[in-house]
Length: 331
Image 1 (tube, one colour):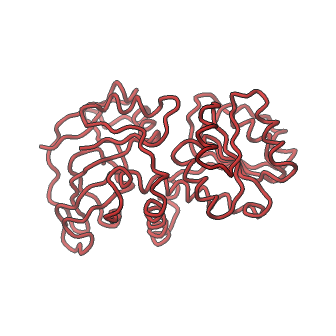
Image 2 (spheres, rainbow, N blue to C red):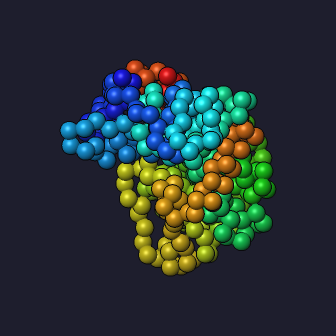
Image 3 (tube, rainbow, N blue to C red):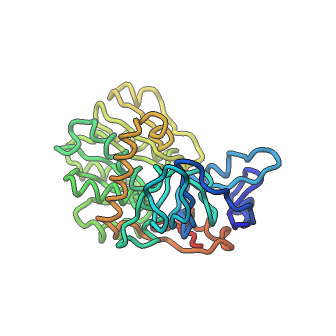
């Protein structure tokens, strides 16, 4: 038997998740490898799935899409990765277990210089930042005179996007929820303007910073009323790119907000990337995400590390106000 995080019904992850024993996975099939997991991250998207997607009746599901560990067995036809190789896997449903079988093509080799803390989060968040970067660049002014507004800029994805944008000389404005978070980001990225929405004049502050230059793109993982404010800041032809739904309320939006400036709305998810991207592009994107972890280790903060039997504390930490970095569970 092997230990895993499981749930029998959809609901609040802090209530429904439990550490249980499940049968050991069988020997890996052709084209698959078996991994002894050493750590996995908890992403907000993982928790959203547990909240709303129930397991099959009478069964306990193992959540999670990302994990890092060591290859302990390979199936027929697999030459790489070899047994003993450290790897990170994503996206692999059911990754929150001590041993998992995964397609060999999903196993990304982890360099010796990368710790388990970083390896556990080296694909999903960097990949999301890469997809946002690609989407933002569809506006010709990005990288020239245009600003990209980066909401929730203190999140893991938000900070990765800021670091990448600086490297590619893309002007961004960081938007956060509190003055304390703004101060932290200002110290981390002193050349990037940062504005807190707890100031009632924050929209006007953004306008002052851009000083007439266009805002072709706003990135937003929150939704709700803040998304409507971001739309109001976009220049003609601009796009709000939504990649999360933290807020429970709808985005309050009148048609005139779109018509006046020909504003566009776009959703971006890794799920769509999985189903609509050619295998060669997916492999290239995942390799790029891994390279980011190697070159920018300082951007992979760990908000907290927990053991399997602390899963309730771990999931409660994920949505804790002021959290910086990713919550990790270690075996």
